Amino acid sequence: MYATNVRNLKRNPSEALRHAELEPVLILKGNEPNAMLFNLKTSLGDINEQLKPALAASLFKDRVLSLGAAAQISGLSLSEFIDHLTQLDIDLVVADQQTAQELKVLDEWLS
Image (cartoon, rainbow, N blue to C red; front, side):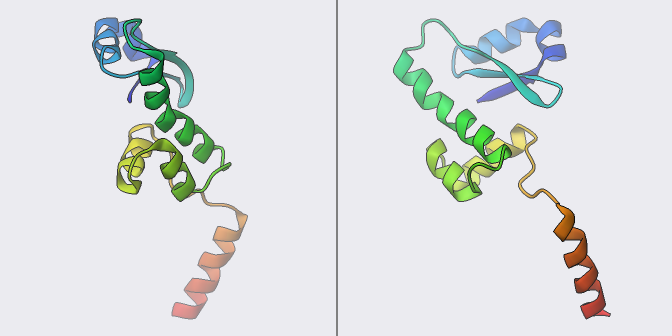
């Protein structure tokens, strides 16, 4: 799936249209998915298959699914799904409050 932001879409809409002939185009506003662009000649069955990675990425980003479960839903291999997340600028690991504590304990242990 091709992803672009609103600024690039305004600057060069024909690029997004060319990509839409092959696959859905995800349009980002900021870093958040905002809209999808589809070619009208694409069958609904094809669109359904092409949307699976987008849905899986969204569910992973919202921490509804684990990385493995999201990859399975996407229909991609794990490495392909990780590449897909990277292209969409979705972090694989998100630090939380416990991460700082764990790093502190690790630093003490290694000292």
